[in-house]
Image 1 (spheres, rainbow, N blue to C red):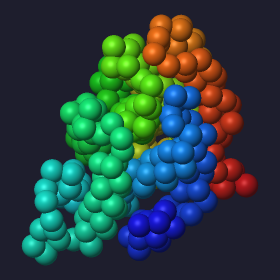
Image 2 (tube, one colour):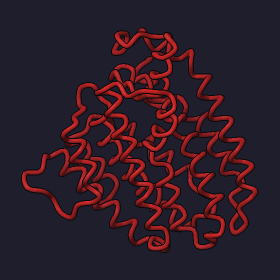
Image 3 (cartoon, rainbow, N blue to C red):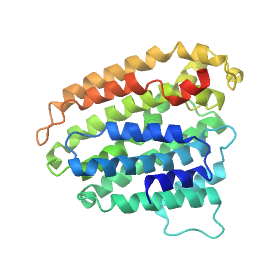
Image 4 (cartoon, helix red, strand yellow):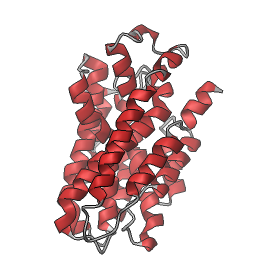
Length: 292
């Protein structure tokens, strides 16, 4: 399917507007490894956005106060591991399946898919587990800072996106894979913070306890849980943005050091793109629409 068709399909069951999805496409078109084949960049941007839309559908089952559903989430998580639709499949799950199958069919045609296939599915499991963890936070109060820092960043699926980049990077030598994994892990932390800085106002109104800045604010006594759902809480949350910007800055500095250790391809400057991501998209369209 063309990306426009996937966005339309999402619109049949999802609630986020086209501007937000366009914003995601801009991000994925902007941030990719410099070693990617130039002729693959447009395809990668579209496929990563399709993955993000699949991820958003799952995220809303885990986080959104009005749309969360443990039953549908458990069904949705099984989509990548089941062949074909189930009997009486819910429309929401069926939509997710169509988007996933279209996405993964394209990824399987990448030049180095087979080479990185096991890593890709390992990382996919971490993304799905992150969403499961978010659901547990919002339903049984599982929140704690250690697990939050471990699981939460996987929800933005940046490691999966960089797996896709490697599948389209002919010059990359697997001898560099260990170092590249470190870069991917740090990049995911940075992108997760950039995304959160742009989306936490919506998540505060949706009473999403799995959002790291909301979690921190409650644990530190900056806000009470019963304040969520009201715009007045946003000013208090904004006072904690600096904590996450400092964390992003630290990860970017570590990435810059790791970049120099990659021998087979030149990825110098990738950390700089992530720094621009925090600067440019750290206040995404959702915060704009809520505050104005």
